[in-house]
Length: 396
Image 1: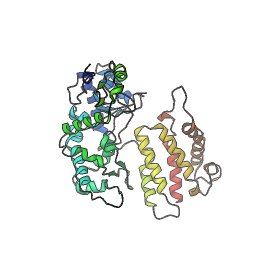
Image 2: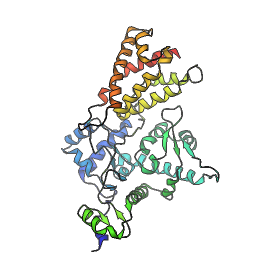
Image 3: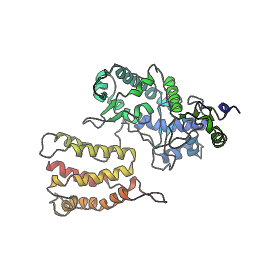
């Protein structure tokens, strides 16, 4: 038997889409273009229903992808979403590859994105290595703005959210600096795989090639009969003595973008003016606000992205972190003994103290057979934490 002929070809991410797929991309892309944020899945479902498509989830899952046929392998497609539980308040996102099909995304996900990629590749190639130690090299958002003076601050702030969807770029991006939209990118060695890429089609093809390669293994001759039996009917491709390439893939993971809208502010949990006041306290107080600043920035990012568990953990971390500002050893002592400016402030502190039990449950409850029920609706009202931070900033 010629085992090299077993299985199907890898899907083409640039292949034409059907009307339902085009409509889904349009619904998501139009909202992203207006607000800088991917819409809730419930919104997408309702809009698709209004437009005559009653199974939006099936349409989403029909979008082409390449890569692994298992949850542990690499995959890349037109969209990222949670295949285990596509919740109403989740935010499925489109990748750069969707720019091949979406006029609404082509400008940002096309020529602008390729310019950023080429910029990183150029600087990675220029790094001078040391023979004595291994050092990481970075490009920061400040470097990028200096070298591209015409770029908008909204585009710079949106880049981390775009990076999160792209295999080669999500490896190197991380928050940086005091600016909430600041980032730095490690010029890692995998960038060299994208040298010579000069347009969107070339980029998507290169990602597809690398994704397929990441799911390729050598098959010993002795294992051929067993693997043929296991994979021959499941769409796998076997090359005896050479390589095994997975067939039709699935998309795994739920990655949510974090762009900043050019025309409207993103949802906030902690008031931005409070954050600026806290930033101004740096170097001016006995107690350092550095960690508190990072906690509230991460809280805002997780709230914006709809990460309920992370929000619980970060609110819990903040209320445990601030008691020394109030002259107390614990938040329980602060809620009971601190001379709060108003009765409302005291009540908010009590609400946060009660929330600690819920946060502990979220962080420490072990896995079970039934599905979890925590959602963004369970996160404390922003007014509680903002009132606490208002008092803390005043006391620093």
